Image (cartoon, rainbow, N blue to C red):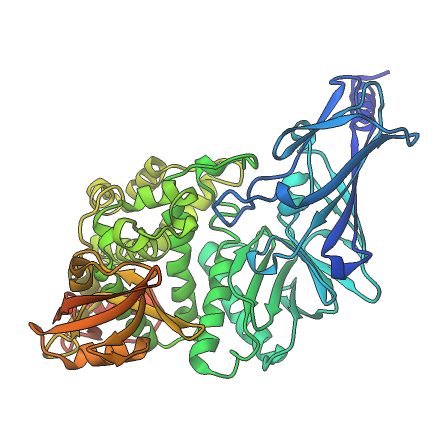
Length: 591
């Protein structure tokens, strides 16, 4: 027997000895919200005698530990002959099956699923949605082995997913790919289209005023513009899963798909439709940034606990920046609308006290316990790795263009990182700094020290000037302001934000206070803004509130709004390099 034949024989035997992993997903009674899952491991080796099965504690794309195991309703295990196998829970998300010498183990369990808006798992009499990390158990030691899934749809339903397969049977090369391809199961409408020879699917559950042809046309523009940014299309097929219902919202990126929630009638209004396309652009950009190019702290995923990283501002914030920029470059948003967005971001950045308290890298690291928990003190004590991360990314882009006379940009840095750190090889902040230096010949250490790891105020005016843009105060006189934000619900007006250091803050107003009157007259949220805006700074207002069902009055001073509204406009006398940077940045002519 020659050496080649020996190697082939050994390889065949090794493959034959590997365990096989099969999942079956049922939903026989949708109204109960119960998924029926069967997981079979076959050809298991003699050791170990126990099979540990885990349900992830979080789902990729949302950086917060969830109570996913709490939805498991029952659990049982048998061997290949149907004999019951003993098992016990040893942690909240870990089941240990004592299989002994059994080579085949079949586990059955049901999961309560009614969390469509969390984009984890949902089942009702209209449709089903599955993020695999929220539903499918796995054994860590066999995580890299191929898996097969058979779906048993409810009567008349069909399956749409990014998984490889036909009909109701699908495969994946390992658990990580398996759970990163969500499934929509129901009567959703699927529209197939090709972009440069690669198949894509627009899948919409729900009714609304959408037009499939318009969506396909605009999504194609986003796809082509984004691909031109990165230089490749790293998938064989891509699926947009749209949930279009009155309560839908939010979105999540996946390996070759995205799930996007939207209200039914946003597609005919220009502003709301641009908002929808912005979400599409953001999630699609993630196909490269975070699904492939990933921070080291999340490489590989540890599904059992928090995955700490200081680079979420790049994974999410940079994606937010490009999500908007791509729309301009694709001709789906005018430069004028983009500049309006910048002026709103500038004011929001400077109004948020938390930006001067928590560094951007700290917001990234603490995402698991702060940002994604929506803490009460967030606005006053925390930064935001999405919004501020987007701003820092934009200013970094312009800083690169300025220092290199527009020879390089953040586009070049991201493409270089993407090549140097393929999926499975995560990057750190020091890697980003080194790549910046390699690409531009410039040291950005102080920039990161000030604006990423520090809390220095962002230099909006000076950096926007690199692209020939000026920041102008919108009003000649700053508006009156007390630093209070409220919302109306169920006939009540409640305080949702008290800005640190503001008159309302100093007067003692608190989150949750129910505002019933201003200067003796009943008010709603809009009234509070309008009436305080009419008063002159230096005056006072009396706010009457219920706190713990007790009526209280607070005297609040009226002040100038500390950050006046502004506009971002083009210079009337730009230099040639300013015009060049502007035009290359936005892919738009200077007008």
